[in-house]
Image (tube, rainbow, N blue to C red; front, side):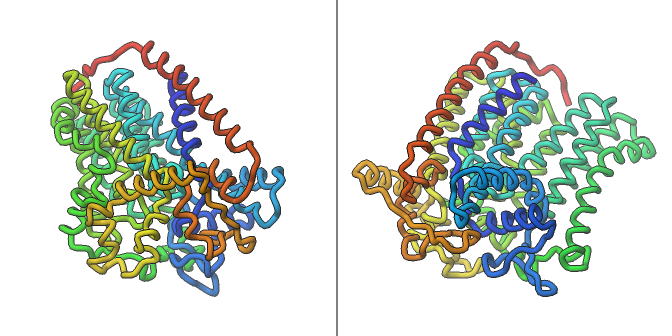
Length: 516
């Protein structure tokens, strides 16, 4: 427990330091507006005219997105609202303070994911250092990291999927503890409440559970059905929540609200190529350590056969599903966004390979993680929308189903965001060192809109760094407080890192002794 809390704090500090303190994308804005109306008025509609991804019904405008994340973020909204009232902020800018606090939501989610992944690694029999290495690799060496400064749904979906598998595996290890089934069902239901396509993952979770129960009860259907209810009842709460949500919006429990907003029309070879091999979206480019999963799964299968099949099923099914999706690349995103929830399973499979690896292989794994971290620096330092605007691919010039939609950033190597972000970061750093720091005026009008900056000054954003401590200076605030807070947080992270090193090294190593 002590180690878990320290892991949580360590990664929370990293995520907070790297945060952006803003919610500029349409997805983030849509969910934020829903969070705000739930928090202030207990209603689900959002103001029209700010975003396009929604539908009208009975004169009200509703977001396409499911209610899960918006509901979970309500406490963060209240915290931001309190901060806006206490700080000396002009009324027209208070909503920016609220957004800054809400933007830390995924920083906390990411820290919980870190604890879960470390715990799962330990349950699989990995020792402390490999377990922590895998956790560090996922959280800062893959494209999960930049999403932890966003208000997108992928970190929360990662938590629910990883949690569902973790608790089912815990039940397999301790079949007398039915609470693990309840927790697994709850995580599965909350995943569906956050995004309905999570149902695909639930199919495999349920299949894994049935297989466990079949072996435990020697194929007795009555006992299998009885045990399944511990999982199905809490999971059903998430399904019931979606039905109620649909009815409250559209008076139809089966109307999800995606009126013309989605389709699975991409040729599968395009989506597969894009997500696996393209210069702009390849999962191996944004999460280099996953290259080792090709060999990792072979080792993992020899010891944990059932879990290896489950992990591969989750990865391949999500890969196929989103390869068919019209927006297979998950636009407005860093790397292959839709594969982020299954990254933990690719990372976990590598642990078995590293547990008995040679020094050379371990060094190669470290190099891949460092390379992944290097890639993520570009993704955290420069906001993706600024890069797409600078190369002329946003606002969108073509529709999602056009084969040449965002062709440059998807398929042309020298326009790859990995390279483009670093070019922008180095250019901006040079400008800052020369004293050319952008000075940006806020619009002073409706702060709910996506980018509350005068349109004539939005190009100045191309020359900024996307960190919460830099934006006050861009807006003309001269106070040393942001840098002082940054220094304190970095000091806390350094101290926490030393504490983590001591705890990790003091833990007794364990060896995998069970076979599944």
